Amino acid sequence: MFNFLKDKLKDAVDKVGEKIKKEEEPIEDTPIVKEKVKEKKEEVKKEFEKEKLHEEIEDKGFLKQIKEKVTTKKISEEKFEDLFQDLELALLENNVAVEVIDKIKSDLKNDLVDNPLSRKNIEEQIKTSLNKSISSLFGNFPDILDKINKKPFVICFVGINGSGKTTNLAKVTNYLQKNKKSCVLAAADTFRAASIEQLQIHADKLDVKLIKHTYGSDPAAVAFDAIKYAKANDIDVVLIDTSGRLHSNENLMAELKKITRVADPDLTIFVGEAITGNDAVEQAKTFNEQIGLDGIILSKQDIDEKGGAAISISYITKLPILFIGVGQELDDLEQFNKDKILQQLGLE
Ligand SMILES: Nc1nc2c(ncn2[C@@H]2O[C@H](COP(=O)(O)OP(=O)(O)OP(=O)(O)O)[C@@H](O)[C@H]2O)c(=O)[nH]1
Ligand SMILES: [Mg+2]
Image 1 (cartoon, helix red, strand yellow):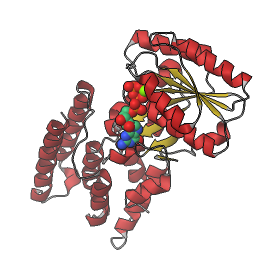
Image 2 (image 1 turned 90 degrees about the vertical axis):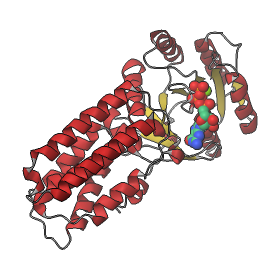
Image 3 (image 1 turned 90 degrees about the horizontal axis):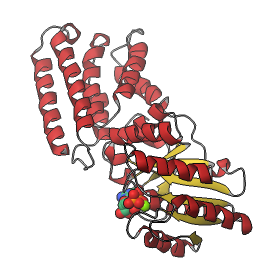
Protein backbone atom coordinates (compact mmCIF):
# COMPACT_ATOMS: atom_id res chain seq x y z
CA MET A 1 0.00 0.00 0.00
CA PHE A 2 2.61 2.42 1.05
CA ASN A 3 4.78 1.65 -1.94
CA PHE A 4 2.00 2.74 -4.22
CA LEU A 5 1.79 6.09 -2.51
CA LYS A 6 5.56 6.36 -2.46
CA ASP A 7 5.78 5.87 -6.24
CA LYS A 8 3.01 8.38 -6.85
CA LEU A 9 4.73 10.96 -4.77
CA LYS A 10 8.07 10.33 -6.40
CA ASP A 11 6.51 10.92 -9.82
CA ALA A 12 4.99 14.13 -8.58
CA VAL A 13 8.25 15.36 -7.14
CA ASP A 14 10.07 14.56 -10.37
CA LYS A 15 7.48 16.41 -12.40
CA VAL A 16 7.54 19.46 -10.18
CA GLY A 17 11.34 19.38 -10.21
CA GLU A 18 11.40 19.29 -13.99
CA LYS A 19 9.02 22.23 -14.19
CA ILE A 20 11.11 24.22 -11.77
CA LYS A 21 14.26 23.51 -13.75
CA LYS A 22 12.64 24.50 -17.05
CA GLU A 23 11.17 27.66 -15.65
CA GLU A 24 13.04 30.81 -16.71
CA GLU A 25 10.86 33.30 -14.91
CA PRO A 26 10.65 33.50 -11.11
CA ILE A 27 8.90 30.47 -9.81
CA GLU A 28 6.37 32.36 -7.73
CA ASP A 29 4.87 33.69 -10.95
CA THR A 30 4.05 30.25 -12.23
CA PRO A 31 0.65 29.23 -10.94
CA ILE A 32 1.01 25.82 -12.54
CA VAL A 33 3.55 24.74 -9.92
CA LYS A 34 1.37 26.01 -7.12
CA GLU A 35 -1.59 24.21 -8.62
CA LYS A 36 0.40 21.01 -8.84
CA VAL A 37 1.30 21.14 -5.16
CA LYS A 38 -2.30 21.87 -4.23
CA GLU A 39 -3.47 18.91 -6.27
CA LYS A 40 -0.87 16.63 -4.70
CA LYS A 41 -1.83 17.78 -1.25
CA GLU A 42 -5.47 16.84 -1.88
CA GLU A 43 -4.44 13.54 -3.42
CA VAL A 44 -2.25 12.62 -0.47
CA LYS A 45 -4.99 13.56 1.97
CA LYS A 46 -7.49 11.37 0.15
CA GLU A 47 -5.01 8.54 -0.04
CA PHE A 48 -4.52 8.63 3.70
CA GLU A 49 -8.23 8.67 4.37
CA LYS A 50 -8.93 5.86 1.94
CA GLU A 51 -6.22 3.48 2.96
CA LYS A 52 -5.10 2.20 6.31
CA LEU A 53 -1.43 2.76 6.01
CA HIS A 54 0.21 0.56 8.55
CA GLU A 55 3.24 -0.58 6.63
CA GLU A 56 6.62 0.89 6.98
CA ILE A 57 7.85 2.64 3.91
CA GLU A 58 11.40 2.22 2.82
CA ASP A 59 12.26 5.68 1.88
CA LYS A 60 14.83 8.30 2.40
CA GLY A 61 14.15 9.57 5.92
CA PHE A 62 12.31 12.75 6.60
CA LEU A 63 15.13 14.14 8.63
CA LYS A 64 17.60 13.59 5.84
CA GLN A 65 15.31 15.06 3.22
CA ILE A 66 14.67 18.21 5.18
CA LYS A 67 18.35 18.52 5.91
CA GLU A 68 19.05 18.34 2.19
CA LYS A 69 16.42 20.91 1.35
CA VAL A 70 17.73 23.27 3.92
CA THR A 71 21.42 22.81 3.47
CA THR A 72 21.65 22.55 -0.27
CA LYS A 73 19.06 24.99 -1.50
CA LYS A 74 20.33 28.40 -2.41
CA ILE A 75 17.47 30.79 -2.58
CA SER A 76 16.89 34.46 -2.91
CA GLU A 77 14.27 36.18 -0.83
CA GLU A 78 11.80 36.15 -3.73
CA LYS A 79 11.89 32.42 -3.96
CA PHE A 80 10.06 31.65 -0.77
CA GLU A 81 7.20 29.90 -2.52
CA ASP A 82 9.66 27.86 -4.53
CA LEU A 83 11.57 26.78 -1.45
CA PHE A 84 8.44 26.05 0.41
CA GLN A 85 7.02 23.88 -2.32
CA ASP A 86 10.03 21.61 -2.01
CA LEU A 87 9.71 21.61 1.74
CA GLU A 88 5.98 21.12 1.58
CA LEU A 89 6.32 17.99 -0.50
CA ALA A 90 9.04 16.63 1.76
CA LEU A 91 6.83 17.26 4.78
CA LEU A 92 3.79 15.71 3.12
CA GLU A 93 5.77 12.69 2.05
CA ASN A 94 6.90 12.18 5.58
CA ASN A 95 3.50 12.16 7.21
CA VAL A 96 3.49 15.65 8.62
CA ALA A 97 -0.13 16.70 9.06
CA VAL A 98 -1.45 19.26 6.58
CA GLU A 99 -2.46 21.62 9.41
CA VAL A 100 1.10 21.53 10.72
CA ILE A 101 2.55 22.18 7.27
CA ASP A 102 0.29 25.22 6.95
CA LYS A 103 1.53 26.49 10.28
CA ILE A 104 5.18 26.01 9.32
CA LYS A 105 4.55 27.77 6.03
CA SER A 106 2.93 30.72 7.69
CA ASP A 107 5.73 30.99 10.29
CA LEU A 108 8.40 30.87 7.61
CA LYS A 109 6.58 33.38 5.48
CA ASN A 110 6.36 35.80 8.39
CA ASP A 111 10.00 35.37 9.16
CA LEU A 112 11.52 35.28 5.71
CA VAL A 113 9.34 37.31 3.41
CA ASP A 114 8.74 40.36 5.49
CA ASN A 115 12.39 40.65 6.51
CA PRO A 116 14.79 41.24 3.66
CA LEU A 117 17.42 38.50 3.73
CA SER A 118 21.02 38.72 2.79
CA ARG A 119 22.11 36.06 0.32
CA LYS A 120 25.19 35.29 2.39
CA ASN A 121 23.58 33.62 5.36
CA ILE A 122 20.20 32.83 3.91
CA GLU A 123 20.48 29.15 4.75
CA GLU A 124 21.15 29.95 8.37
CA GLN A 125 18.15 32.23 8.48
CA ILE A 126 15.89 29.58 7.01
CA LYS A 127 17.22 27.03 9.45
CA THR A 128 16.66 29.36 12.38
CA SER A 129 13.16 30.07 11.20
CA LEU A 130 12.37 26.37 10.73
CA ASN A 131 13.86 25.59 14.11
CA LYS A 132 11.67 28.23 15.75
CA SER A 133 8.56 27.05 13.94
CA ILE A 134 9.03 23.35 14.66
CA SER A 135 10.04 24.11 18.24
CA SER A 136 6.77 25.90 18.81
CA LEU A 137 4.87 22.75 17.89
CA PHE A 138 5.80 21.24 21.24
CA GLY A 139 4.80 22.47 24.64
CA ASN A 140 6.59 21.64 27.85
CA PHE A 141 5.93 17.99 28.34
CA PRO A 142 5.77 16.98 31.99
CA ASP A 143 7.55 14.06 33.58
CA ILE A 144 4.99 11.45 34.55
CA LEU A 145 6.47 11.40 38.07
CA ASP A 146 5.40 15.01 38.56
CA LYS A 147 1.84 14.05 37.72
CA ILE A 148 1.56 11.52 40.51
CA ASN A 149 -0.25 13.52 43.14
CA LYS A 150 -2.44 10.95 44.88
CA LYS A 151 -2.37 7.39 46.08
CA PRO A 152 -3.18 5.20 44.38
CA PHE A 153 -2.61 7.04 41.13
CA VAL A 154 -4.49 5.31 38.32
CA ILE A 155 -3.16 5.18 34.76
CA CYS A 156 -5.13 3.67 31.89
CA PHE A 157 -3.54 2.72 28.55
CA VAL A 158 -5.70 2.91 25.44
CA GLY A 159 -5.26 2.69 21.69
CA ILE A 160 -5.95 0.62 18.62
CA ASN A 161 -4.97 -3.02 18.18
CA GLY A 162 -1.28 -3.79 18.36
CA SER A 163 -0.18 -0.20 18.93
CA GLY A 164 2.08 -1.17 21.83
CA LYS A 165 -0.15 -0.62 24.88
CA THR A 166 0.89 -3.69 26.85
CA THR A 167 4.60 -3.40 26.08
CA ASN A 168 4.72 0.28 26.91
CA LEU A 169 2.66 -0.23 30.07
CA ALA A 170 5.41 -2.62 31.18
CA LYS A 171 8.08 -0.05 30.26
CA VAL A 172 6.30 2.67 32.24
CA THR A 173 6.00 0.30 35.21
CA ASN A 174 9.75 -0.29 34.97
CA TYR A 175 10.35 3.47 34.92
CA LEU A 176 8.08 4.04 37.92
CA GLN A 177 9.71 1.24 39.89
CA LYS A 178 13.14 2.68 39.20
CA ASN A 179 11.81 5.86 40.72
CA LYS A 180 10.64 4.09 43.86
CA LYS A 181 6.95 3.86 43.02
CA SER A 182 5.19 0.64 43.89
CA CYS A 183 2.88 -0.63 41.15
CA VAL A 184 0.05 -3.06 40.50
CA LEU A 185 -1.11 -4.07 37.01
CA ALA A 186 -4.68 -4.70 35.88
CA ALA A 187 -5.27 -7.18 33.05
CA ALA A 188 -8.31 -5.38 31.72
CA ASP A 189 -7.79 -6.76 28.24
CA THR A 190 -10.01 -9.78 28.76
CA PHE A 191 -10.70 -10.00 25.05
CA ARG A 192 -7.63 -10.82 23.02
CA ALA A 193 -6.30 -14.36 23.16
CA ALA A 194 -3.17 -14.67 25.32
CA SER A 195 -3.32 -11.04 26.45
CA ILE A 196 -3.43 -12.00 30.14
CA GLU A 197 -0.47 -14.37 29.79
CA GLN A 198 1.44 -11.66 27.92
CA LEU A 199 0.95 -9.22 30.78
CA GLN A 200 1.70 -11.95 33.33
CA ILE A 201 5.13 -12.44 31.75
CA HIS A 202 5.84 -8.71 32.14
CA ALA A 203 4.50 -8.73 35.71
CA ASP A 204 6.77 -11.65 36.63
CA LYS A 205 9.77 -9.96 35.10
CA LEU A 206 8.99 -6.74 36.92
CA ASP A 207 8.03 -8.56 40.09
CA VAL A 208 4.69 -6.78 40.45
CA LYS A 209 1.26 -8.07 41.32
CA LEU A 210 -1.12 -8.63 38.40
CA ILE A 211 -4.85 -8.49 39.02
CA LYS A 212 -6.64 -10.70 36.52
CA HIS A 213 -9.99 -12.31 35.91
CA THR A 214 -10.97 -14.83 33.26
CA TYR A 215 -11.20 -14.12 29.52
CA GLY A 216 -14.53 -12.62 28.58
CA SER A 217 -15.09 -11.09 32.01
CA ASP A 218 -15.89 -7.43 32.56
CA PRO A 219 -12.69 -5.35 32.12
CA ALA A 220 -14.10 -2.57 34.32
CA ALA A 221 -14.38 -5.08 37.18
CA VAL A 222 -10.70 -6.01 36.77
CA ALA A 223 -9.70 -2.36 36.95
CA PHE A 224 -11.92 -1.89 40.00
CA ASP A 225 -10.31 -4.85 41.77
CA ALA A 226 -6.80 -3.61 40.99
CA ILE A 227 -7.61 -0.23 42.54
CA LYS A 228 -9.09 -1.99 45.58
CA TYR A 229 -5.91 -4.04 45.87
CA ALA A 230 -3.75 -0.91 45.65
CA LYS A 231 -5.74 0.79 48.39
CA ALA A 232 -5.52 -2.24 50.67
CA ASN A 233 -1.79 -2.69 50.06
CA ASP A 234 -0.59 0.90 50.03
CA ILE A 235 0.48 0.74 46.37
CA ASP A 236 1.41 3.99 44.61
CA VAL A 237 0.29 3.37 41.04
CA VAL A 238 -2.30 1.21 39.26
CA LEU A 239 -1.61 0.58 35.56
CA ILE A 240 -4.57 -0.67 33.54
CA ASP A 241 -4.03 -2.54 30.27
CA THR A 242 -7.02 -2.42 27.89
CA SER A 243 -7.72 -4.29 24.70
CA GLY A 244 -7.04 -2.67 21.36
CA ARG A 245 -9.99 -1.10 19.59
CA LEU A 246 -10.74 1.07 16.63
CA HIS A 247 -12.22 4.42 17.54
CA SER A 248 -14.95 3.72 14.99
CA ASN A 249 -16.20 0.66 16.87
CA GLU A 250 -19.03 2.03 18.98
CA ASN A 251 -19.50 -1.03 21.18
CA LEU A 252 -15.85 -1.25 22.09
CA MET A 253 -15.64 2.49 22.70
CA ALA A 254 -18.69 2.20 24.98
CA GLU A 255 -16.87 -0.55 26.89
CA LEU A 256 -13.84 1.71 27.23
CA LYS A 257 -16.04 4.51 28.52
CA LYS A 258 -17.33 2.10 31.15
CA ILE A 259 -13.79 1.23 32.21
CA THR A 260 -12.86 4.89 32.54
CA ARG A 261 -16.11 5.62 34.39
CA VAL A 262 -15.49 2.86 36.92
CA ALA A 263 -11.72 3.30 37.30
CA ASP A 264 -11.80 7.09 36.98
CA PRO A 265 -8.14 7.20 35.87
CA ASP A 266 -5.93 10.11 36.86
CA LEU A 267 -4.08 9.72 33.60
CA THR A 268 -5.41 8.22 30.39
CA ILE A 269 -2.59 7.56 27.97
CA PHE A 270 -3.08 7.00 24.27
CA VAL A 271 -0.47 4.68 22.80
CA GLY A 272 -0.05 5.31 19.08
CA GLU A 273 2.41 3.93 16.56
CA ALA A 274 4.72 6.55 15.13
CA ILE A 275 5.04 4.58 11.91
CA THR A 276 1.35 5.02 11.07
CA GLY A 277 1.88 8.75 10.68
CA ASN A 278 -1.33 10.66 10.08
CA ASP A 279 -3.42 7.71 11.20
CA ALA A 280 -1.94 7.88 14.68
CA VAL A 281 -2.76 11.58 14.81
CA GLU A 282 -6.36 10.99 13.70
CA GLN A 283 -6.79 8.13 16.19
CA ALA A 284 -5.50 10.24 19.07
CA LYS A 285 -7.90 13.01 18.09
CA THR A 286 -10.91 10.68 18.06
CA PHE A 287 -10.00 8.86 21.28
CA ASN A 288 -9.58 12.25 22.91
CA GLU A 289 -12.99 13.37 21.75
CA GLN A 290 -14.63 10.17 22.90
CA ILE A 291 -13.02 9.35 26.24
CA GLY A 292 -10.72 12.27 27.03
CA LEU A 293 -6.96 11.75 27.02
CA ASP A 294 -4.20 13.23 29.18
CA GLY A 295 -1.13 12.26 27.23
CA ILE A 296 0.45 10.24 24.48
CA ILE A 297 3.08 7.56 24.18
CA LEU A 298 4.38 7.39 20.65
CA SER A 299 5.58 3.83 20.19
CA LYS A 300 7.86 2.30 17.59
CA GLN A 301 9.74 5.52 17.01
CA ASP A 302 12.81 3.32 16.51
CA ILE A 303 11.39 1.99 13.26
CA ASP A 304 9.87 5.22 12.00
CA GLU A 305 12.05 6.79 9.32
CA LYS A 306 9.70 9.68 8.80
CA GLY A 307 8.93 11.47 12.02
CA GLY A 308 5.72 13.10 10.81
CA ALA A 309 3.61 11.77 13.67
CA ALA A 310 6.13 12.93 16.26
CA ILE A 311 6.08 16.41 14.78
CA SER A 312 2.31 16.64 14.35
CA ILE A 313 0.56 14.74 17.11
CA SER A 314 0.99 17.10 20.01
CA TYR A 315 0.24 20.24 18.00
CA ILE A 316 -2.96 18.73 16.59
CA THR A 317 -4.26 17.13 19.79
CA LYS A 318 -2.85 19.68 22.27
CA LEU A 319 -1.73 16.72 24.37
CA PRO A 320 1.74 16.14 25.80
CA ILE A 321 3.93 13.32 24.51
CA LEU A 322 4.84 11.64 27.78
CA PHE A 323 7.21 9.08 26.32
CA ILE A 324 8.43 7.65 23.06
CA GLY A 325 8.86 3.91 22.62
CA VAL A 326 12.15 3.00 21.01
CA GLY A 327 12.19 -0.79 21.07
CA GLN A 328 10.69 -3.90 22.56
CA GLU A 329 12.66 -4.12 25.79
CA LEU A 330 11.72 -2.68 29.18
CA ASP A 331 14.33 0.06 29.00
CA ASP A 332 13.36 1.14 25.49
CA LEU A 333 11.37 4.12 26.68
CA GLU A 334 12.53 7.71 26.42
CA GLN A 335 11.24 11.09 27.44
CA PHE A 336 10.30 13.15 24.43
CA ASN A 337 13.19 15.42 23.63
CA LYS A 338 12.50 18.43 21.43
CA ASP A 339 16.18 19.28 21.03
CA LYS A 340 16.95 15.78 19.84
CA ILE A 341 14.28 16.05 17.14
CA LEU A 342 15.62 19.42 16.01
CA GLN A 343 19.10 17.98 15.96
CA GLN A 344 17.97 15.05 13.83
CA LEU A 345 16.36 17.53 11.47
CA GLY A 346 19.70 19.26 11.11
CA LEU A 347 18.22 22.41 12.62
CA GLU A 348 20.45 22.77 15.65
N1 LIG B 1 10.22 -1.74 17.63
C1 LIG B 1 9.29 -1.54 18.56
N2 LIG B 1 8.35 -2.46 18.78
C2 LIG B 1 7.43 -2.22 19.73
C3 LIG B 1 7.42 -1.03 20.49
N3 LIG B 1 6.36 -1.08 21.33
C4 LIG B 1 5.75 -2.25 21.12
N4 LIG B 1 6.38 -2.95 20.16
C5 LIG B 1 6.03 -4.29 19.61
O1 LIG B 1 4.76 -4.20 19.00
C6 LIG B 1 4.05 -5.42 19.13
C7 LIG B 1 2.68 -5.16 19.74
O2 LIG B 1 2.88 -4.68 21.05
P1 LIG B 1 1.80 -4.86 22.20
O3 LIG B 1 2.34 -4.17 23.40
O4 LIG B 1 1.38 -6.27 22.34
O5 LIG B 1 0.62 -4.01 21.59
P2 LIG B 1 -0.86 -3.84 22.17
O6 LIG B 1 -1.30 -2.48 21.82
O7 LIG B 1 -0.90 -4.21 23.59
O8 LIG B 1 -1.62 -4.93 21.29
P3 LIG B 1 -3.13 -5.46 21.53
O9 LIG B 1 -3.26 -5.71 22.98
O10 LIG B 1 -3.20 -6.70 20.71
O11 LIG B 1 -4.04 -4.39 21.02
C8 LIG B 1 4.92 -6.31 19.99
O12 LIG B 1 5.64 -7.17 19.16
C9 LIG B 1 5.86 -5.33 20.68
O13 LIG B 1 7.07 -5.91 21.04
C10 LIG B 1 8.43 -0.04 20.22
O14 LIG B 1 8.51 1.05 20.81
N5 LIG B 1 9.34 -0.36 19.25
MG1 LIG C 1 -2.14 -5.50 24.61
